[in-house]
Image 1: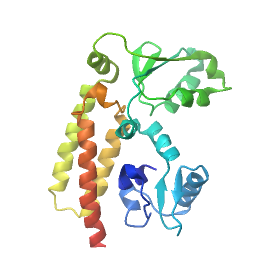
Image 2 (image 1 turned 60 degrees about the vertical axis):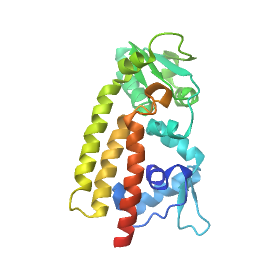
Image 3 (image 1 turned 90 degrees about the horizontal axis):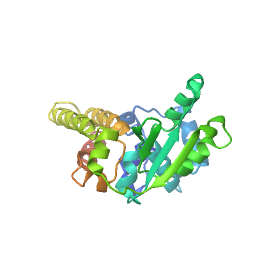
Image 4 (image 1 turned 180 degrees about the vertical axis):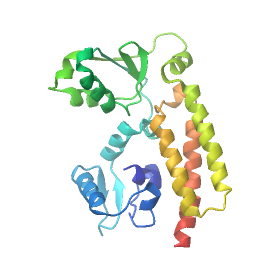
Length: 241
């Protein structure tokens, strides 16, 4: 799904998954990949073109992608202004349960507010309900939706997500991109390495909306820069085949 979004961008056009594009994402068209594609088709996460040769991301697939890479949500949607607050106090003797819950919520843009309280601007309450419904951990969890009444939001963002540290990571990656683009490496190799660096970045980005980090947030700059680099290098890769 990430491949289809990054190559096809947010209009979700059909993409041919050929040997030219798969290696950029460290994929090969083998039995495992075919099984994954089949599962995503059945789950309506992707759809297939009439000739069965190309695929695109569905809206359901896009929503699912945003649960792993929350940065993409507010590239396309506006924030509704609501904070989601999750509280859970799972006993130490049930550490495995607690760790499993944290892993499941890892991509939801959650940040630690206070002890046992996590917040996110992402609309994940229904996802949480589905995740824990009928399971033992359900009795340890409370979830709320709230607006911000007063206090400096920029201070809250820094406290919860250490946004200045994330910005440093972006600046370091942009410097590496510049070095790669200036190198003598082939376009496909450049695109593969830049894509790897970008995926590492967005795994750590909580995907905060523009109203919290402003339009000048380096994450948005990196996204649009990546799209332009991808367009140029991808076209060069196709021409060199």
